Image 1: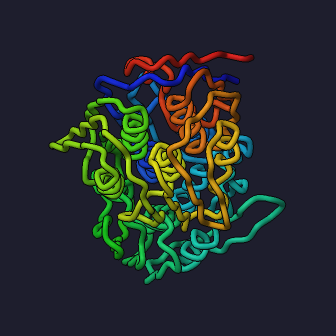
Image 2 (image 1 turned 45 degrees about the vertical axis):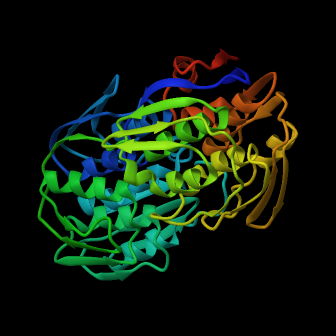
Amino acid sequence: MAKLLIEGGRRLNGTIRIGGAKNSVLKLMAAAILGHGAFHITDVPAIDDVRTMVGVLRSLGVQAFLQGNELHLSVNGVHGRPPERLVQSMRASVQVMGPLLARLGSAEIALPGGCAIGTRPLDIHLDGLRRLGARIEEVEGRIVAKAEVLKGADIVLRYPSVGATENILMAATLAQGTTVIRNAAREPEILDIQEFLNRMGAKVQGAGTSVITVHGVPDLGCADYRVIPDRIEAGTYVIAAAATGGQVQLLNVIPHHLEPLLRILTAMGVPIEVEEGIVRVYPAEELSPAQIQTAPYPGFPTDLQPQFTTLSLKARGQSIVRESVYDNRFGYIRELGKMGADITVSQNRAVVNGGRPLWGTSLVAGDLRGGAALIIAGLMAEGYSEIDGLYHVDRGYEDIAGRLQALGARALRLETG
């Protein structure tokens, strides 16, 4: 257990390098189950979710070692089922279901856990796998899937679910025949999975569009791969820079992955420069209020909504934030209210009355991105803030205290036992 102590009122200044994408590498690790041989994956964030997935892979017979930001996997025989305690601690662990089903003809996993940000049903995952020929039932809190053989199918997703797109895509790589996934999610991390699988010998095309085609192959090999930069980590630091009136340069960024955020920040008055692999944020003279609505990519990402809502407290006037992806993502707002924030929530809509000072206080992070929002609020506030529940933030941000310190923040991690 740990907490973060922040002294607010200091501008962030300096240069920071963005690491590999959490929401990509976890799925690449699951995809490796489909192959054989030695994998070397670089730019891997040293975060708790990656360590959890290492444990999941080891439980399935994969040799997995994280050394710094490099991951080494050796995949030969795959067997067993992942322990419930690991699956229940991280929702992304459900992504091993499709690869296990394709590789072994069966998969059994506990119902997954993760952040408490609303209802996130697995029915789209399961319906797609059923279309490939799987028989699936829920038995005493576990999902049990079996299939003598998977066969390609034409699958239309009722919603462009990222996880379902990835699970079905991975399972289809070893299915007989051709699979077409329509209304597929278009997130950049899915394109990363396609590139990784194709280096392993798969035949996947269309990732990044709403139609993905997978031509099944008999088996897959291994690959060396570098993970794409984390657009959510990058967006978090962009927002933190704007919130503190700082001047920050971000390296190892794919700017067009951040376009929805950069566009709205520019409209609010934040000076931003972009070149290949680099984003620079400069101090704004004054922030204008804004309206956003989260949506699947290429819309405004739900994983940046809490951070953006916190930033909007600095804009004089009324901002409106609508959350259309998750049904319970405003839990962090109660904590912001302790700091003096004036935010009213009604169903999926938050009305933010900005321009008022925030005061440091004791806060509790309830989920990963909400925790990042509270850290930004602590940087904005007058006085000291103490943020408990830092383990949520550790799931997705590598050494956030150290990285903030490198940008001039007064942020101290306290281990509490």
